Each structure stands twice: as structure tokens, then as C-alpha cells.
Length: 130
Length: 367
Image (tube, rainbow over all chains, first blue to last red; front, side):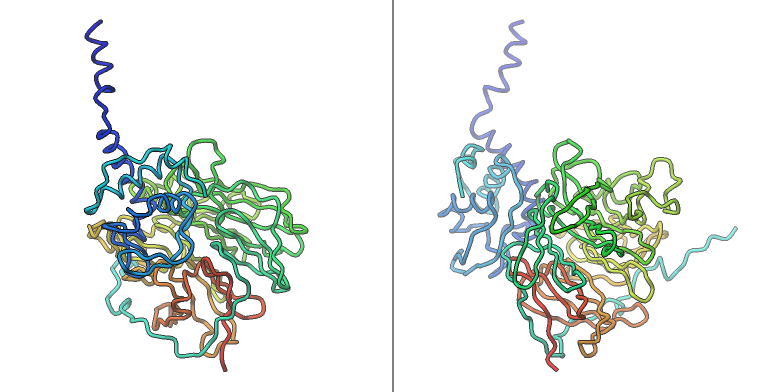
């Protein structure tokens, strides 16, 4: 009985912050490949002057709330400057759920040379209003 | 026993057939804004009085007439997901008598998680949709955001053709006629299935299928001279195609393609296989063809008989000239105006274009 008990509890107790982050990143990768890749490209570099890069993007890290808002409500109005280059393209609303947006953020923030220790959670996305 | 394989059909296209460089359009024209709209206008159609009916992808339908936009009431709930939303519209060929408007949209109507492409019709009376009938609902629902297809076109016999893309499941859907996705469909105007559809007597097949092995066809027109249905479809990276749709034929995706994966890896080495159709033309690199229209108007010098395809990614409209069903020239129109989503010749003979986030424009020749 005791052995079964330990067996059931063990996997849950070791599911630390790092593991849930890596699960989120993994989910985020497949969502990125469905919803984002055609414009932002497989290497996250975007298209110079047309689609802003996500890889090593100063805008992404300095305006994280704005970036989540763009995913949730569809794009950013007006011109932005990313890594010194102007962008003014339209990103449409993708109809993503809050947990999916968190996953895409976690994948983006930890790919192509990006690194972000903290995990974006579903609640964080939920909190962000238009 | 002799087995006949048509060589012309099965051997891959020679480089000469496709390496036609695009040039700038020589004819002069202006792009005149008809009405502004910040949304994605996925489709436009014209009433007899040249006023415009337009779908907005996020799920609304508007009627533009004499400077006034009126929202059409009675639209069913639309599932906005990735490339899916409210898509195309088509008037019944006898619309002035029967008021049937046909439309395609993504819906989650069969209850499972996610959604799929749905074809419906309703009577459009006094800016309101009434007597809604669901004519076709692709299965199963999926949360994938890709390849809803969604173009509609009537032929000369009042059959309705529509496209549904592979829904991001290329290894499963396009080559299996028992499943939806990656197909061109043909139904009667009331949603019933014509008895002479190619797989009508095939027990497990989706009997509305007319052709298969497609990736994501989003441009469609009826050729005014032959009455045939022509499509263009999004390829992967490279390999967008023009096809003439023939009954029961397999257009090969993903067993044959001229494209590769977005990541650069190979999908298949095969560009042709026996029993699979070759495209009339393919694009490398991809232009992302969003729409397809035949110009029959003689308002534009030298443009009559050309095809227009909207290039979503490259942000221009391609005018394609053909000779004996071969592409002989390609020119750019409306470069850098934005992402063209739909192109239509209006009853007045002018070409109209919807540009994402900008609105509807009219192409006016400078003579």
C-alpha cells in the first residue's frame, strides 16, 4: 500500500517550476509551428522591415505585456521599433486560448538564443486586458 | 493488356514551363479606395447595382452601398482560429429570384473541441439572413489553425464547388477520400450530393468530394469560356499551384509537390507520380495565392483573358497571361499596397481588390 502511495505522489512532487516550464515550451513549439511560423519564420528572425524578429528581440523583452496583448487581441497598432528597425505590419487575432498564449510566450522567450527564467502562466495572460 | 499512362499528365513539368520571371506591369492604372476597413475583408461579391457584400474574417458580413456600411444580421456563430473565420460568399446564380446566399466559415458546430470548415446558405432579405441551412460540415473538429480552404464557386449547371484545405494534417487527410480535408467538393445548390459525383458509389467515401490531394486551395473561378473550375492553392515553402479541377482526380499532395517544408527539409523527392495530376503552373518561391479571378472585361487594354492572383506574402497582385493553358507572362500590379485577400471583377467591368487592414480598392486604367 505504502509503495503504491509513494509511486502516485512522486511524479507530482518533482514537477518543479523547471519541468512545467519545459512542458509549456514544448506545447508552445507546436503552437508556434501552427500559428506563427509562416510570418515570424522557423528561426524567429521574422522578415527584415516587414515582420519583426522574436529572436533576440529587444521589444519582446522590454514590452512583454504589450507582446502578450498582441497575441491575445491581435497585433499592435502603429509603428514599433525592434532592434533598431521600424515595423508597421498587421498581426491578426488568432483565436488562441490563454494557456496557449502562455505556451507560445514561453517557447518564444526560450528559443533562438532567448532566455527567460520565469514561466508565463495562464493566469498572467488572463489578467491582461485590452 | 495495355495500360495507358498519359505522359503529359504524369511527367513533371519542364523548367521552361514554370521559369517565367515576373516583371512590372507596363499598363498604367490607379488604385482608387472604394471604402476603408481596418479588418480583414476575406471576400467580396457584387449585387446587380454594383454595391458590395463583404465578409470580415472575424465574423461579420457587411453591405456597402453609396458610402454607407450596413451590417447584415443573422450570421451563425463563427469560430475564429488561426486562418479560419468567416470566409467566402457566393450568390446563387438565380439570386435575384431566390435570394440564396452561400457562405463558408469555420464552426465548432458538431460539439467536439476545435472547429472545421462549414458551408451554409441563407436567404438574404433586407440585410438579414433568414432560413439558415447548413449544407456541409467537415469532420472532425480540430484545434489546428491551418488550411481551412473556404473558396466557393458555382459552375454553369448550378453545382456549388468549394475547397477545404488539409487542416494541418497532411499525412492523414488529403490522400484519403473517406476523410474530409485537402479536397475540392461539389454539391447541388440545396446541399444534396450529385449522383454522378466521382465517389458517390464508394461506400465509405465522403461523397461530396470531386477531387483530392490538395493542400489549401484559396483561389477559385469558373472559366467563362470552358465552364471549368480553376483553382490556385498554397504550397508549403515553394510549390503553390494552379490547377484545373477534373472529376475524381488526385492532385498529389503530399505525395508529390514542388515545395519543401518551412524549415527547409524535404517533404518528398517526387514531383510527379503515375495517376497524379501535374499543376498547370507552380510558383517557386511561394507567393501565397489568396484569390483567383479571370478578367473578361475589356476596360483594361490587353488584360482581357488574363488571370489575377493575390500574393499574400509578397503583397502584390499577379496578372498571369496564358496561351493554350500555358503561362506565358507574369506581371505585378498594386505592389506594396498590402496583403490582397480577394479579387473580383464587378458587374461594371472594373476589378476590385480587398486589401487586409485597408479596405476595398478599384483598379482604374489610365488611358
